[in-house]
Structures are given as C-alpha cells and as structure tokens.
Length: 153
Image (cartoon, rainbow, N blue to C red):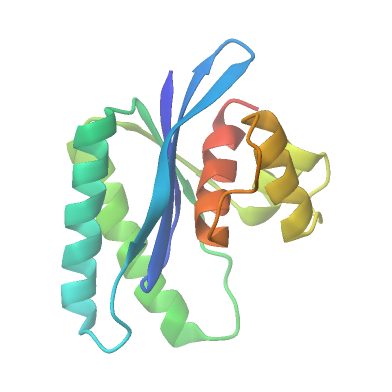
C-alpha cells in the first residue's frame, strides 16, 4: 500500500510517501513545498494545490494522511492553515484517495507509545521505522512521514 503523509502549513508543507508491505516500510519520496511569506494567500493556496497534485500524480498513493490542525494561540495562522488543508484534501479527494486525519497526539501515540512524546522522539521513530541513516529534514518532512506511518501503525 502506498501512503502520502502531509504536515500542512502555508509557508512550508511537509510531504512523505511510503510503501507498506506487511511489516516492511519503505520511503518513496519526501520533501517540502515552500511558498513565499509575502505572497497573497490565494497564490500560496494555488501553489500548494498544484504541487500536491503533482506529488499525487508522480507517486500514485492510495491513501492520504493529513495531520489535523492543532489549534494554537494564533487564530490568523490557524485559519490560513485550515485553508491550505482544504486544498490538500480537495486534491486527494479529486484523485480518489482514501483520506485519513490524525491529531498530533494520535501520531505521537502511534509512533512512540505516548501522546506526549516530544518532536525528537517522533523523528527518531521515523528514522528507525523507515531504516534511515538520518532523521529526514526539515522537521516538516519528518512530521509528514510520521503521519504516513500512523496510518498503518
């Protein structure tokens, strides 16, 4: 099964594509989508939508796992990230993917056994589960791979 994990944002969107065959998990593609901070939200959303579509076409996942928004103090940021999540979910829906959403504590729980794990613990589990030499960088990429790994945990 091929799974696309997404760590949503507007400035940086992390993505990671893995194959899962029984207990074997293999990284296929991973990286980030970046948009300029001074760019209008509409243009950022268009870039994100276009690039997510390209990632889906290139990697042909069956499932999209997207991290749910963890509501922080900055309401303006939360709203713009919600818009970004919407265009990502739309791209997945249009491609016929099964779409799953997990909260950050659910992802931490699935990978480390505790919903209160810190970022470093999660990143180390991503490295271990995918048999990588180093933790994927930047953090957004590792977070997206963690989301993908949660689907099959």
